Image (cartoon, rainbow, N blue to C red; front, side, top):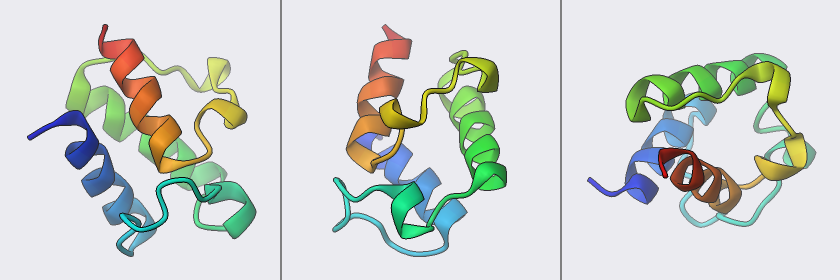
Length: 78
């Protein structure tokens, strides 16, 4: 499975709904993600992709849409 599909699957699970038609919507403005679900997202992404995404270095503006999460994960994978 490609990174995009895997990230969307993780997001769908955490958010509890299909976000595939909301790829540029801001999670935080819409209330779909809060601080706890953000930590869960980072931990799931670290586990799934064997990447390091420390909460201490988390910049909300770089992770606030599904497309940005996908891009960030791809950049961390290398």
